[in-house]
Amino acid sequence: MIADNNDGRKWIYGGLALGCFFLFQILYRFFLQLGDWFELEVKIANFMIVAQMVAIAFSALAFLIVIKHKTSSRFLVETYNEMIKVVFPDRSETFRTTLVVMVLVTIVGFILGMFDMGAGWVLSQLPAFY
Image (tube, rainbow, N blue to C red; front, side, top):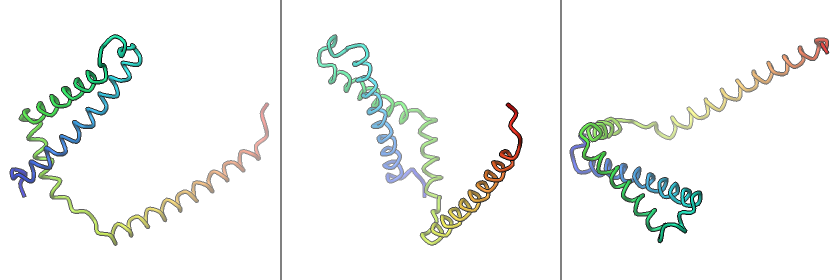
């Protein structure tokens, strides 16, 4: 399956739009924090609207730059093409792997606990040098 079809482009543009939405949220909160620090609400009329518009402008500009830049567009298409090749494990394999990890973590934790108790006992047997 190649990402040149519309489905691939929809996923790429959707993921990029979601990333730009997160960028908008971060920028908007940053501008609000700047407003609190420098009391910009008093100095700029309708500061909240201005902050939103600036954050939207930066996010839209970032979206357009990534889409129009040949290298980044090619990277996104290649990433999508690789991601559709990924085979995820089924439910039973995931359960078995999770169980093995939990058992091994418990065993290693028990062994490290025994080493810690042993080291504590050895150190308690040494005379105090104070």
